[in-house]
Length: 278
Image (cartoon, rainbow, N blue to C red):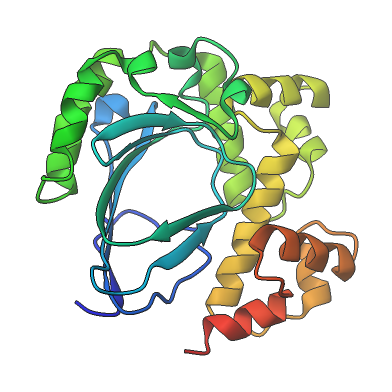
């Protein structure tokens, strides 16, 4: 398949949000996701795999606005754990590569890290520090797997062996992040604290310990994901109304944040135009 992206998500999986460039150039690209075993559902959100073949073609950049999740990433035979990246993530794709990942549920990695997830923000560490040497034995075999199901089958026994005991605070953090993601009327951390029945400072401590970023950041990130999705869908939008709907006091602040986080030096209207001009 040339010049297109082949998505092989499971039928129940939602389209990935936060991907800033939906139209890739000449080359072969694949993206797949798979849910974990039921025993891991409170701990792992899903497995993912990205493959590309750009041999003989120019490198291509891809950028994302990451979610508030920790990832185990296996690439080029090496496994690393990545904390939440609070800015824009940029990756230049070149040659032929396979990248496999485990997206942990929000709040779910605290027990494995044995410390505040915020300490892992914007950095990574060798996966063996969390999962032992077993992950290093598995990692080199990942690229040779035929599909994501085979990759998951290699990693899942290790995850099951390390699955933490149920933690009510982790479950609460996960539920609150889900509210921030799914409720478009939720615009301020104070609202989320009220719904949780706790003070704002207690909510901030919970997020720092279990999620890795602040509740304000999580809400803002998901509202920005919503804005990008609407622009990518080609919907006609009134920018002032959109800014207010996303929790901004005025259009100028929304456009400023959009330029800073989405990059490319463009306002939302310019970004939308680029998405549909190919």
